[in-house]
Image (cartoon, rainbow, N blue to C red):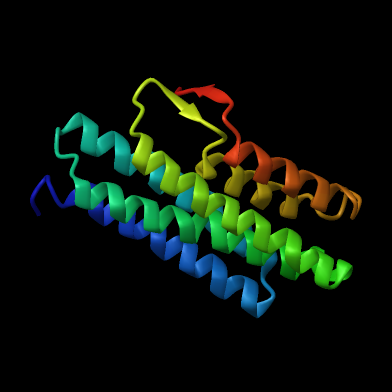
Length: 167
C-alpha cells in the first residue's frame, strides 16, 4: 500500500468507529458507543501525524478528515448524549443534542476555511466529542443537570473566537 493512502485509510477507520458508535447507540450499548468514539479519537490523532510525518497531506485528506470528524465527534456524541441521558429532558434534550452537532459542523467548516497552523480558534470538535463520550461513561455519578450545561458550554466553546494552543 502506498504511503499516500495510509493516512486516508486511518481516517476511514476514524469514520468506521464513528459509525459503530452510532450503531451501538441505536442498539442501546452506550458504553460501547462511548468507547468507539474514544477509539475514533486515537485514529484521528494517528492519521494527521502520519500525513505530516510522511509529507503526504492533501486537500482530499483534509476534507475526508473533516467528514470523519463530524460523524465521530459531532453526530455520534450528540446522538449518544441524547439517547443515554438527555432523552429524560424531552424536546429540550433533543435541542441540546442538535445544538452540539450543529456547532461542531460550524467549527469544522471554520477550521477548514481559516487554515491557521499555529493555534485553534475555538475548541476543536475532536476534543469536545470525546469529552461528551467520557461524561456518558460517568453517567451513573453525574447529575442530569450537568449534561445540558456541559453540552452548551462545549457548543459555545467550539464556535467561540477563543484562541487555543495546538499541542
